[in-house]
Image (cartoon, helix red, strand yellow):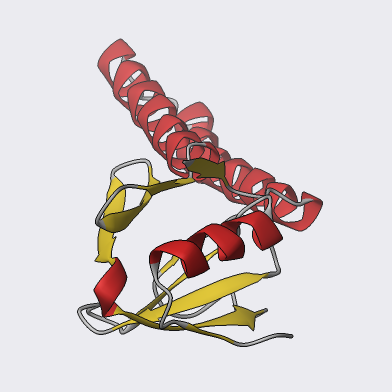
Length: 147
């Protein structure tokens, strides 16, 4: 079963600002430099396309997949395989700025698990109640805290 990430307008705003700042940082020096060569232009535009592509891929490909033995949380090149028996607790979170997170919304849930480097991952499934129901089926001992 596959769940896509909820994407809210705040997150789209933040990503747009990030891409605009990145574009400005790369393009303004390029266009103000009178000694630039064609190679400089190609390199800068290549860096810009790769950077924007990476950000877009990482943000808009976030999904959470239930497999038989584990939950796969992935976005772009970032992936976490969380065994169901390792999951200890799930709680709502609005703290999207710290910790390990693969989410694209201001409100999400935090999954605590034993084998995680940081001990938890923050996610934002579009169908939150259905996601929690499926998680409870596959991991009956999990403690689910309500908001």
